[in-house]
Length: 381
Image (cartoon, helix red, strand yellow):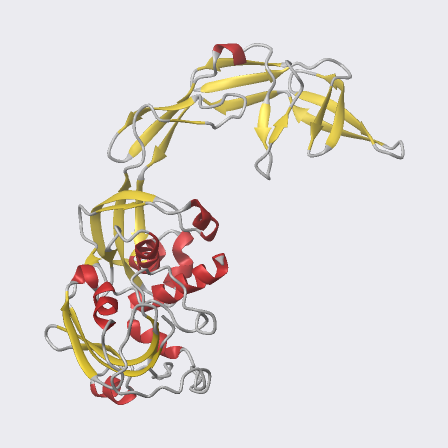
């Protein structure tokens, strides 16, 4: 089910960016021909039905920006030879995350254009309609502008797909920036692009007094002590009962905890550092990535340990005896997002949290119209 939802979200993202991109999907007319023999000219769309719809979309000034008709695209200078101009396959539903019934779910989807979806109910098969004006908030979203706050509440299950909560305020918009000056983190979205628009955003999710765990030996002991418009400062203060004779812990590559020698570590704050020194006993054991080590000897900087495998073979490994940790560190809370990244992210947010009703690109903030004809209705409601 997760994969189906993500697939639907991916298609919806394409629609928001440019509705005509959906036309690149190659549809087969024969797929559902036998599912209904009803051809009544008065058949009407109800919530839960599926429909084949041809359309032309345009702005208030009459400029056409998307269409399912090849000849109309050519007439208006928006023709793309990579697209297969054909009707949209729509699942008529008010909830964007709903999936069409079995047999339709692979091709038919809810369009994330509330004004259009609402207007389809009651429309007849074979009839031409003009739908609009559809205001931006019910079309492709309000334009993302300076001082806008994006506060997305995204279900945890989507974090594995990189769709996480965001709570930022747009503090600046910089146009015509060379992509060479954009973080490599966004290179995937900038393929074939020379310049972009950067949206500068300040993270609002932090507050003075917030805590986190940086070192698992000291749970929730790293606290925000200072914050300004650009940075926050974290300070780690080990609790009194975890300074002398405590057990040092680290996170493994897999996120679980590694416990070092029990009650064999001491910590001391010196300047901007926390110095942790391990003083285990000879022959004291600990397990490191499933390998059991025993202390052979140590000096001021290293601890020499041995391991005996099941066949009696002995191997040795050295561990650092002294750790120099950061006591006070800063973190930048201002980020620069390229337009192309927001073209992907904002429609996804809008699907998962409709309160985030913002967009970038040519259709953002625009009032739009749709001239449509309902070619075929499938009574799946």
